[in-house]
Length: 394
Image 1 (cartoon, rainbow, N blue to C red):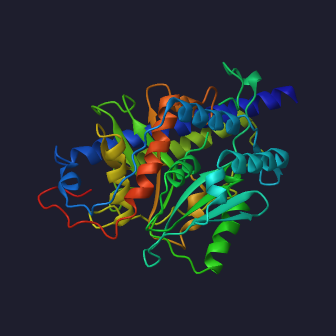
Image 2 (cartoon, rainbow, N blue to C red):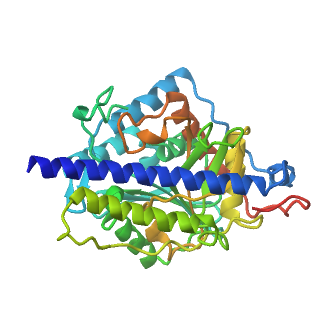
């Protein structure tokens, strides 16, 4: 039994290594290819466009506010909302987390602009009412649950020791007297790590019953990479909009995927070491449709503008995210699903994603809150400005 358990652990570790290697291989290929097809002035068109004027509330926090922001963050991550399987969740921790939300964000849950609903016992759906109801709403997604972690795995500090952003941003804006023009939704799923079959699926069902259609959905995904991709000079924000049309599967990456698939199967078979064991695909799903990313696409351009507002030194490029999130369940509510997290990734950080010593700096967390503060306000414009001519589109 011990030998079999050891082989299983080795198998999981090897497959994880191969998957992460393939992820960054494709990020490298497609990011560099995307950036090299653009002009050197890739962001000029967006910056020179005649954007509708709105009175932005700047994200400036005092030291006391900064301490409170980080205290909320640390308290949230200390709650072990672990999902082991779709039927094995830490429901005690999920209830504790729900209590934390109302304590940490009193302005959000007391606001007349916010309608809050608990879905499937532990997920949360918030509707933030806009002053212009004719504007199509959008949705921001996040999740409460985490993957299992233990100090015995080799963490330098106890896991669950220091995560949030969207609600913190909304709390900040409401305390400043902000009323959005464009309404929006916030979805917090409680079982994203185990496919979202209860939280996200039921949240979508509620929205469908209300007849909701969304301008776009934003969920976690790709990052701001700096020094991670070989051959890419300077930081780049990779905005995942699902597989790139006309390219994916038609170039050298197709052969790589086919070769990698055989490698994974060979690895599984050799690790099991028993010819009587047959390996088959048990479950899977089709990739999501391609989201729009041209100069007339509201969601993509608003996200691009926000990234540049908060991180002016980066280049924004489409990317490919091989992982999946709750956002895949929302494809009937919008044609545009984007996956981006305003987090800086430097060399060595990729190995920590869902791994030992996964972390985020205090400054990065503060920037994340600032990103959502800016995004929510940028979405208040009625429509995009006319496209600036002479600049390549993605």
